[in-house]
Image 1 (cartoon, one colour):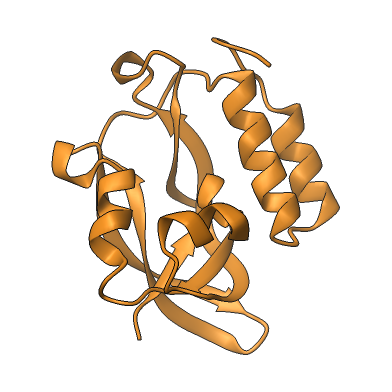
Image 2: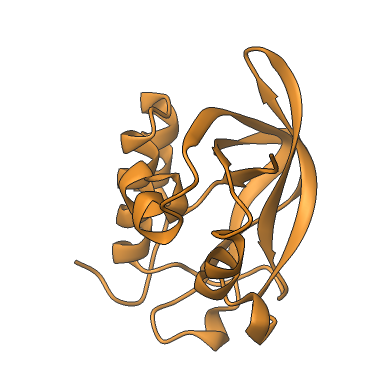
Length: 150
């Protein structure tokens, strides 16, 4: 079964249950050599959107889901794939059991811009709900933001 790695609001198991009800959480891990960043601020009314970029000195917490074929089109729709907003790539996620290959969405736009306070809060809450380390959640909550707040 294909694994999906969520690093944004889809880390939240409750949200994923709504978006992909047939696809259970399968664990968590780290995208080693990647950095969480934001981009496409000019494409949304609320601010920049989450994405990842290569960075040998960084890592990003990710939650893994076993995505069944019937849920994948809905996931693509939620992520704006048909609009060209995000594209799918496959990366290795480091888990306690070793590396696993998973697909994920990356922004098809330039890096830059600030996410809204609300969006960062949703991401931090999602990371916390998924069991991310407290320092990772704290770093998300401390990121600079702009746009619309709570």
